Length: 618
Image (cartoon, rainbow, N blue to C red; front, side, top):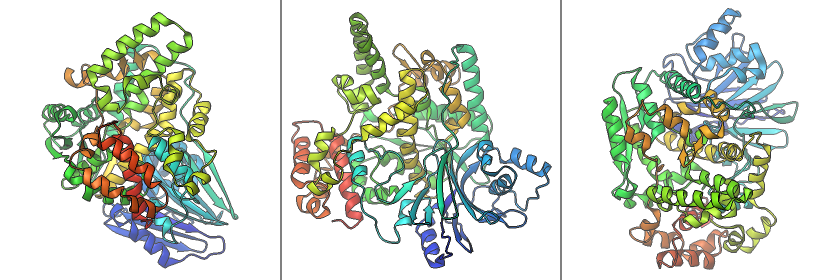
């Protein structure tokens, strides 16, 4: 795990001092060492967090004749297998590091090396013979990579802040609309004009003054649906144990996050089969209705781990939020990022690598909002009796799980267009967003609606059923955002996070399942629940994970009232020049007075305003 950055300029104008500043700005991503390669039109920078091959794994790394150089962020879990194959082809290795496999793999297979990799990665490779820069990102977006183009000159980095050293570029009003609508930023754009993200499953080639971006992986179309439940269970468990086994490789202490849910618990149990006792970490809430630590403790006791907990209190939020926003670089997260940072801070005191359970809900249909797809199908078919029975069962199921608490949505919102269409509800409807923005910002975003981006993903999906299309949308938009937050929260404390459930083989397997093996009746994640029924305690399997829910609405009306009011003070909002002070105050007052439950809306406004203040807008 590390931070990478660099520049490509066909005219050879590589500023060594600028490259050093870029790497220094991301020192927490790799506190152990830095490294550089500067030659002709290219400069590569690197910060190392030593995980594998502590003695000889420094970067940049080259091939035998030093015509290929690269910097790499991530882990290649099948590097030993690839190494043996490349040695059979005559390649000679100088290190035991997984990074060197990429240099020789590119020599052997060119850009097709990507198809052979199993791992999480973002890398930059310089091919001296072809005068070509090759950037790539892993299939599902576990590791980040951004780039900025100015004519033929290209700069890139693991984090946005490293690309802003030349001066803060203009805000992209469309990205602000994205965030206020769905707490996210869609497509390749970022909050800054001119800085783009390389999307999951893409690579970039820059040569001869030209830049092209191509996709090398996407979820399969699911044409041949797997409906044999027993075969699917066997395949799921085999993939789970194999991917966890691969991701245990480490030359430094390793632990795991336990949320109390089924996915992280399954990862921990699979890990315990292959290693001795290790450390586990979870977050505790004083508010019992939000607290899942009893489940986490049960799993920790089951595997005999050294278990550690951090209590999440509202008093930590004012001091923590500036750090969170500094590391995220963009306001594109919900309040669940608060316990996420605290858990990783706790983990950093004990280990350098943590396993997590991310990805199971997106791949296997675990979100309660997926029920909305069933409701839509009932409406579309016009079967009134079916609709009534479904709504009655849904109401009972959601009430038992406290859906309003978990989702921040009243049951009636299940018939809203956004939720039915996209599997999620907007924080602010599009007309309300216009009213929240200053006139100049609203004019810049006029005619733009993030739903056009979501529609484009739905049309692009090759899934044969609506549930599959909604899941595809989440894998392409919501999941990368969650993974960005996980990457930044871990890297803020120099910890590497691994996601065994997001092995690309597991993703392809999940896409092959029939809808009935994903959601059956009112049972979400049907297949994992059936597969893990003999693997985990019954309470864990039957418990519906809440996913770091934070009582942010109550906090804003109690301990965080003064803080939120200060952040959204009219003079500060006016000075930032993005939000309308009066409209912002109306939202805050409506929530604080109890006239409406607008905790999510207040969170979005506070988050955006704090971030703008960090940029110097206020």
